[in-house]
Image (cartoon, chains in turn orange, brown):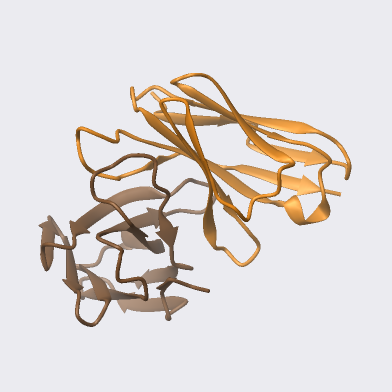
Length: 115
Length: 115
């Protein structure tokens, strides 16, 4: 059973399009995240979402918006895609309090290519 | 501004020997540190973690050492096995109490175990 799953695994699209990446976790975790791994291989936090509280990395353009229909899902919507959005996007989840650790469990990633 | 640095992009170790991966950080507010292992086309997998109140944590073949005064941590793998060949990411967190905190990652070290 996959703990954190993402769809699609690969996404190729044209500049200017709007696209979504879906994420689901079956671990019962309270907190979910989106990370971006760019061409330099840095993994950077984009968003974290906990009990309807959204924490945004200030460097993320507002073309990116997370949507959480329920605790097990955190989807990523991207409007007006740009070439620089090409990257691998990872979803993650963590149990949060009261377990008191910040070990995050990652999905397999979605490779987005903007042409 | 890299707050977590892994200065060795790659490391080659003979099977059966000890692998030592190093990580430095600049933010003294970090108080929880993690190591993740990543295979190609997969998401990072949690390996081991350490709280800033400890200087050592051991789990089977994996040991993490933390030197707070030097802002340095290392991951020791002994004995190294072929399946350990992967990219290892060092990560740090501002809070050990969980919650919606993203991890700050280093660029990773590609460990190659040679037969």
